[in-house]
Image: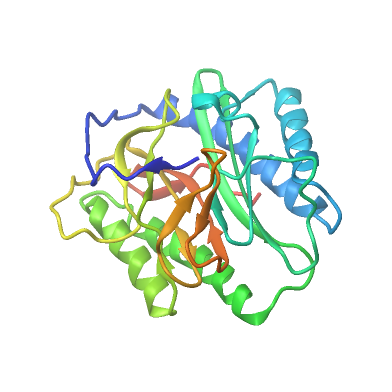
Length: 262
């Protein structure tokens, strides 16, 4: 789940111990397992509510709590955003997936006092070449950002790498929502914009844990929130994609806590 852009404030950044990072990895692996499962079952005709049900069912089986359900009043366990929906789409029994859709799934858990948070964008059947490029670029931009999450770099190095990748492929970065720190709170400092603001940002230290999450639009970067108070859509109704990993900054480079690779 994303947070509103607060102009890159760093706040009080909490450095995690090695034991805390292990707990954060356990939480994030529950998220990774859930997203992998959902990616395999998605098909035309499914409702976004069905996906929410499956996610919560697996979460409870793993003795974790859905992190988003009830958070600031959000009604679902998943944020499920289809096509022009950028983030925070509410699961619905009425919304059925159709061939050619793309669906962004953002999921978080609370496990043994620590949070996990990750997101993927999945095609529903075969999608158009331009939309596939959007999805691939968004995924690639996340990897470019993660590569910059090394000791001594700054938050702005992550932001610039994401922006350069996205805009170099002809797409735009959402600016109203950002990544964030994560730990015993779902949203902690620092905020991680997906674009370079030209400001001096904090240096990365071992033990920082970050949820990096580019949101990328096919058209304008501008977005708006629907009347439900949650669902964010692109202003021009063109498709949007979203990927997220929670990572730890270590002396040996970035550790992807929510990796879906065994």
